[in-house]
Length: 506
Image 1 (cartoon, rainbow, N blue to C red):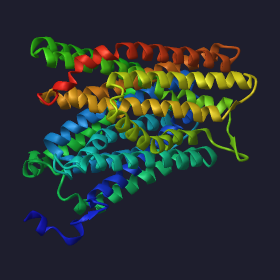
Image 2 (cartoon, rainbow, N blue to C red):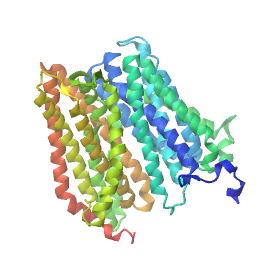
Image 3 (cartoon, rainbow, N blue to C red):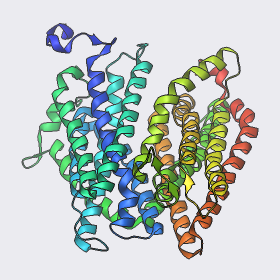
Image 4 (spheres, one colour):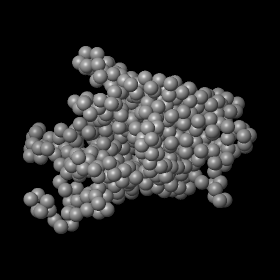
């Protein structure tokens, strides 16, 4: 009956899926366009416009990217209990667009106080906005389908391609404009991308079939404090929270303390659940989940050098001439998304092919392979630079090689880890387990900032900055391989803790 009452344009499918999926695809594509476009410029902007040291810019990058992964936990909670996902996505998109527009205010270079304060505020708007948008737009995708609909997994694959299409196009457009025309043009392009995402989302509202709406709309719109409704109170407090987030970004050490505290509380809670409330099988699964969670920040701490120290290395020490044109360093940030688009279908087919033959690596083994590959990526860059001679620019092919190895590592860990968390957690703990997974990712981003800051400090004190940087890359490359090998050795034991043969019983 409800379906029959819908306008004709909202009914039917496109390529076998609800039309609303493609609205979400394009909205998320433009949001990722803006996010990755801005991220590609961030460290270069800090070092070239504000003349910050590599050490300071690395810490700011780490604080920013880690907070981007913390705020969706709060935004998801507010959407689930009050706003609904659609309103949360729209509000988040508006905040992100405001942030990108503020980034376009360059002001004076160096340590211009007004420009710096605008910069901190801009980052805070983007962080808070991402908290409302990122998790909730993904949730609406799932709401378009019944829980047992076989199209759900393919739908998320389509949606994931939208993410990476935006991640591919953003650094190219924003990087090209930002580095060749002016910083404000690059950040302005990111703002335009987010505004396009908002427009697509608003126009396509009927195609969402009423999904993602608040559970109690009357209560949400009823006056709570004078004329201020519950909905507007959330909006007002969220905008005010920008001030606190801006302080955290500018005082990045506080972000590390926050992550340590949250990690300690989460670990203590999981251990209490495991040994205080669970039977043996569920306890074993929780211990396996904790093992995988501990590897998450190790991987991302190494992987996220691409946006900070590797971005600076590419700008300063790589021969970026391709077909006679010197490609701006920021544009190479699109290579990861390009490789994901190319490799993701191959990996999905590979796991199916190996699974049919009983040869698919276990989840912990895939984590070990991911760490080995991210370590090999750094060693490939080191070996390439040494082969070319440290007095010469490193051939650009080795930048493509490090991105290729890091991307294959990502495909062994990121989607596999999310799937593992959903399998290992008890039904009453799935949401918190997913939240802690992203908290661990945030910790990895902060660690990446610490590594990048260390590279900057070591290079600044060295008579040969290239050699100093490569020595750190060599050390963390071998570290990643070493941890990966240990994980591969432990994988059979951890696999037994997962009790995969009894998941149907659970």
